[in-house]
Amino acid sequence: MSIVDIMKERMSFSFEVFPPKPEQPMEPLLDTLSHLYEFQPDFISCTYGAGGTNVGRNVEVCKAIQDSGKSIAVTHFTCIGNTREGVKEQLDHYLELGVNHILALRGDLPAGWEGTRGDFHYASDLVSYIREEFGDKFTIAMAGDPEKHIQCPTEEEDIAHLKIKQDAGADYMMTQLCFDVKAFEVWRDKIQKAGVHLPIDIGLMPVLNKDATIRMALSMNGCSIPKELARIISKYYDDPEGFRKAGMEYTVNQIFEYMNAGIDGLHIYALNKWEAVTDIINMAGIRTQHKN
Ligand code: FAD
Image (cartoon, rainbow, N blue to C red; front, top):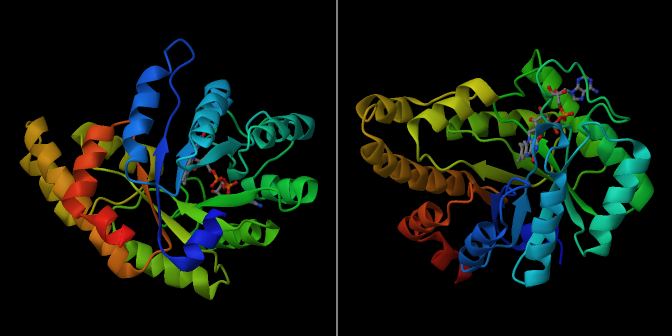
C-alpha cells in the first residue's frame, strides 16, 4: 500500500530521522527506531546532509526501516551534484532494497554554491525524470514551504513552482516546519486556488530547545515565530528545562491545531530523540485516537 492510498482513507502518521555520521555506530539510531515503531508509524523518512553528504548512511537506515517490516521507508533524495546516470543507479539500488517511496528535493545548496552542480536544477526536474525513467515504481513526495521558500523572491512565484512540481508527477507534499497554523491555512487556500491539490503532509518540529528553535525558524527557513512561542522563548530564555516543558505543551497544542485544520498527514521531525517524541505523542493521546 502506498502512503497516498493511506491518506485517501485517513490522516497518515510518520516520523523523520537523520542518519548517523559515517564514523558513528548505527546502533543508537536502530534503538531509536525500535521505540518509534511502537507508535505504528505509516512511514519513517530519512534525510541526508546538504550537498549529498552521508548518503551512504541514508541507504543503510532506509534498508533497516524497510527490512523491519514495521513501517514504510521514505528516502529523501536531492539533486545536488547528481548526474542523470548517477540518479538512475542510486534509485535502482533503492528499488532493489525495497525502498519505493522518495521525497524528491533540490537540496539545500552548500555555502557559496549558485546551483546544484548536477544535471537537475530544481526538484521539479528530478520529479519529471523519476516519472520518465521509473514510471509508477516510486511514490514521489515533494517539499512545500507554507511560509515561502527562503530563496524565492515572491510567494506567487514559489506557488507557481509548486504547481510545476505537482504537474511533473509528484503524488503528495511534505511541508517545511511552520509554527503558525493560521499562516498554513492561508497558504493552503492560496495554493489550492493556484491549482495545487496534492495531499498535504504537515512537518511538525517539536519545540524542545530554545537556540535550535530560533535557528531552525529564523536562520534556516525564514519562518515566523508566533506570539505564544515568542512568549515562551522570553519567559524561559535562561531556563532550558522550563523551556522544554513549555515547548512540549506548545507542540502538543500545535498537533491539535493542525488536526483541527484538517490535514492529510502528520509528520513529526523526531530529531532522533525518541524519549521527547514519546512524551509528546502520549501527552497528545493521538496515537490511541488514531488507531481506534
Ligand atoms: P525546489 O522545489 O527546486 O525549489 C527551490 C527554490 O527554487 C525555491 O525557491 C523555488 O521557488 C525555486 N524554483 C523552483 N523551480 C523553479 C524554476 N523552474 N525557476 C526558478 N525558480 C524555481 N535538504 C537536504 O539537503 N536534505 C534533506 O534530507 C532534506 N529534507 C527535507 C525535508 C522536508 C520535508 C523539507 C520541506 C525540506 C527538506 N530539505 C532537505 C530542504 C530542501 O532541500 C530545501 O528547502 C531546498 O532549499 C529546496 O528544496 P526543494 O525541493 O523545495 O527545491
